[in-house]
Image (cartoon, rainbow, N blue to C red; front, side, top):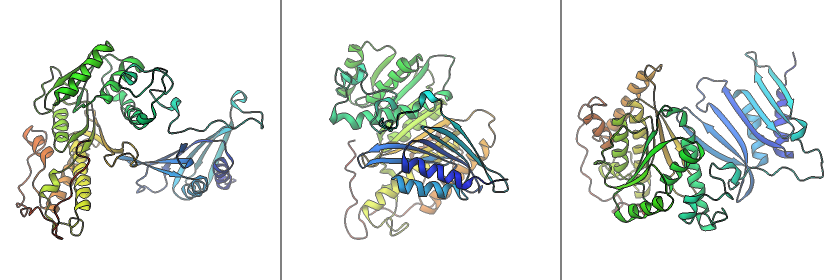
Length: 437
């Protein structure tokens, strides 16, 4: 029986080197321990020109790599040789499906695209490739006037995105994609209840309302909460001006917010320091179906982490800051898993725009789902073992969840050495210049 592995590699490489590539998917790892379960590839236009974006998906997170054509072809070859068993390639001309048998033989089936979709004139220009800025790829497309985007100055009256707001426009659409992916996890038999903790100027609150009410045609009740009276007043004026129904804004703190009914979707973007923990704990207490949080200014661990711990990471201010942020968000994700959620840590937007680019997305597990208790127990054990290694007491989220009875209380650890406020080189800890973001 012929082995089509060489033909598969040839098709993949030719599609990116000669044109016509639309997308590819690699799945079914040959080795059970392979952490990356799936790789999705698509062409994108960025500032450096045409690139091929590889989206690497593990059980808990998704990361991206942008490669040029030659590097993409080399990576295709590697992925086909001993990494994945299933490959799907879509080009302008055909769709190819390939799989590797248990004996290592590749089978390949190629189906030509319908004639109507082919470019039959070779002299015509090739179809325009997907771009980060292409309007048709967005849930809120560019070129189609959107009331709240016009009112907030992101769009002009003709639907064009203003140049100085292009980054915010992409951020809004990226955020909506994360929500759109988990819509099926939300209740479908009644109006949805959504809260945006720390809503600020509420670009994303208005966007969420637009997604459900105008795009998905779902009835929802949304509350935006922020402690700043001025921004809440501005948001109220916009909502009134646009006659938006079932959208309200309130002044208040996360910890003191009382919802008349449990909340289905909790959103918290850039809530500073332990405000993110308050928001997550409140959502868990409600039993929210979904939680989306982009943490910011994770100072709590930094302030109690001894300079001598894990030296030399904690010796330098900037590395200590970043280490504390990563550990804090990892603990948050694990504590959500321990509380009965399926949790992912995802890249929110490109790191070139902001270092605050991690999004924690959690979906409540259905009752009786297989392996849920084992996953929860392991996640909690992992958090407490990590704390033991760092010689720190429970941080805010773990304490709150224990107080609420969601988690069993931990055994007490020895008190960590008092912080001197100075690093080993005598300099003060670095400041977080993004604190006001």
